[in-house]
Length: 90
Image (cartoon, rainbow, N blue to C red; front, side):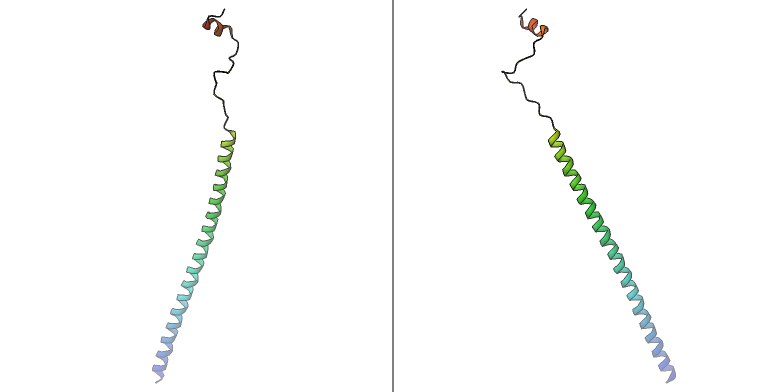
């Protein structure tokens, strides 16, 4: 009977060790998932900063684009002697 009890105790100890190893694995997995979650939140923040910077650059680009008016028939040309000669107005 003593051997049976000893075997039962060893079996229970092995079950206990197995459960402890599972809980350690679970804790490690949980820790790794929390690290991954944190890294994803950092990446998300960095992407939002990049998005903001691109919108600022886009705004600055559209604001600084020079607008050159196209000449119209009513636009006065500058007075230059070479222009008068080409038009025959000496």
